[in-house]
Image 1 (cartoon, rainbow, N blue to C red):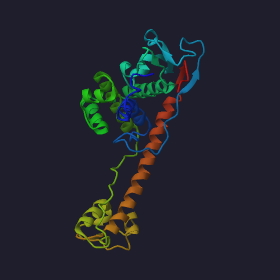
Image 2: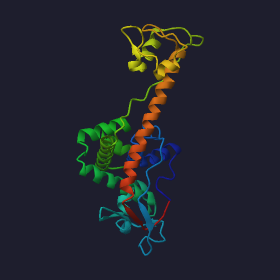
Image 3: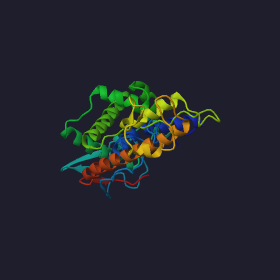
Image 4: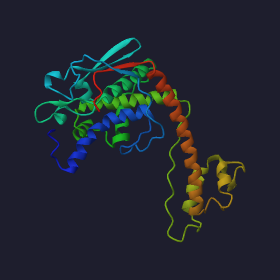
Length: 301
């Protein structure tokens, strides 16, 4: 039984957060937008495909679900890319998302990491190699900004303490994640746009009362479809114009109902662009991963 298994529910949830750092990397590989962790809120595409994987027999780990301290440096899996084969040890797989102390059992053994850990390391390593070739490695400042954006703080020691990892490992993870995001931005030709925010709800019964605040909100979404100098539509064939034909809009007044209609158009446009971004990125990633092979010593879940 793990040392942490007897903790209360709050502690259990906190310990479970140890996988967040590795998840950050997986998310960047998948969509570079994120889902499921705090600021990383959604995904519209599946993870890219796994490099071709096989399970080998004859490993020292065959038939085991836990290992001793002496077995931490045994090979859990290998991956081959561009003619180079790299080993992934049990220790590396554990420390990818936690610390040895955090996952040590009461009898001194360690649960064998999931085979997904090997696949995660392989995916990220392949993309980092591609980033190096393209000379788009993230700087220390960009890594700090990535940590701030995704985890709410750029203090590696604080992150390490929260997620049961070393500060050095957190720094490496953030550097890698920022690099992969930078790689994505360099290869995807479709440019992302800011996600629109829904308008603040009107007071009950005031949904159709013109207000200056909603005019500012709507016009902010209309872009070149609106001519502020003329205080009217710049053209008649835009998506917003079509959706707002039944609403009266001016520089000074618009209704909450109009703001909702404008938000729906803006969000639809945003979703379409993000879908194309994800399609391009996933295609790029899969093209690289399809050239790799992975050999696993175990299929532990």
